[in-house]
Figure (tube, rainbow, N blue to C red):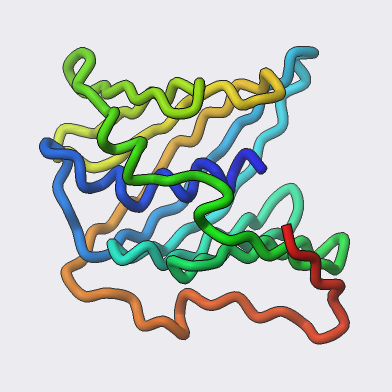
Amino acid sequence: MVLVRLLMMMVPLLLLGEIRVPVQVSATFVQTVTPPNKKIVRYTGELLLNRSHEFRWRYTSPTRREICGDGDRVRVIDHRLQQVVIYKVGSLLDPMQVLKRAKPYRGDLYLARYHGTRYTLKVDPKGQLEQIAYTDGMDNVVNIHFHEVHYGETPFPPEQLQCDVPPSYDRIKG
């Protein structure tokens, strides 16, 4: 799961020394995934996240999907397929290990390598996360640009970060 891997990296990414460390972040995003055949897929959506590794990542187009995490588990809800896949965080990616490897590269760029994947991180002039790019395990080039980024000093309440799963949806443990 390209997005789950990225999202698990993003919350602690904000802890880098030169990136302002907010208690919570909200933003809209545009994500492009370019596979080897160059047929680009463009996603849009919004995200909410707390420094405590709780988040809600909501895709609004071209398909409706939600990804929510509570620091222990990540739930990926695909409304088109009417299913939720539940992952243990540790089985996906250790975001703190990515942070430990992140190094300033040039100007507003940082590089991190973790489990053979190289991440390029870009911050805006205020030190806020602006973009993440990497190539996933299927040779897709993933670029996520963040817009309308707002940092806050009060965490989002847990209920605002939860994903509601209709009872009729299939549940799969990943």
